[in-house]
Image (cartoon, rainbow, N blue to C red; front, side, top):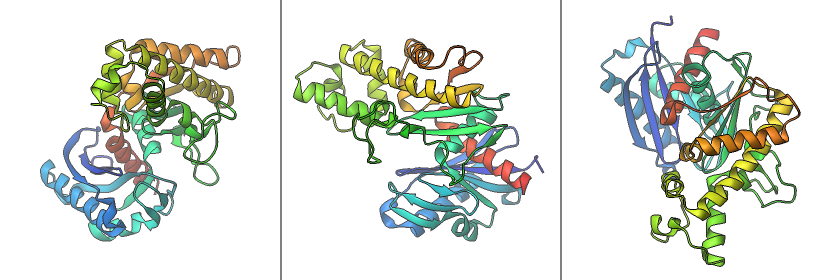
Length: 325
């Protein structure tokens, strides 16, 4: 059974990436298509099916060798039924993704949250190999998390476990997109950083290379821009990153106090923009806010899989679920 291939699908608001993954996690063929979320769920699911067929063709393997499909999808969802409950970036509500895709491609299909899937990818193929209790934290536009306990994804009672971005790290702090104040996401995500740059540059007339790198468009600061600014030792960028590492450290300290996993895996575009100095700062902040000796034996490490975490995690999900079923 384990000798067969699976499909991993990383589904986002702007693109769908599908890949044929071999038994050892080797990527045999990929296909990327725009999501076109504005066309509605049916068209998007057609496009997922299309990208799966293209990936199979490019891989050169027979369709009969495909065992199952795994998908990492945004938004709260029910992994048992494969229903996406709410995905604002896609404008989806109660979409039967598993059922609809199985009707189109005729492969058993398994769905989980995209950050859960990324964490599973790091557990099986990346930084977390060989560890059984892991928390993944992915810092990008928002902040998402995944939890692996005893080698299995932990979903919680209402299937929403891992919403690390909504831990309160500053009571009464800035308002988060979820409506609450002081969430980790409102203080340490790329969206939060963008707001800080806008306030400093536009309202306080602070100088920063960020203005030059973005051509003056401070509305959408990408992780690549942040990385260049860090390498340039831009004073404002370093100051804002210092704040980000502090709040990530507070969040991680709280997680370690409560769950005491073996490993924290940090990924996402913002983390990839950091150098080792900032990772050391995150560790130092976590030590400050964790109970004495709680961090002993807990590794805090960068993710290894980069952009492939989604497809490899989705493939791992498919293999696990087909095996368990």
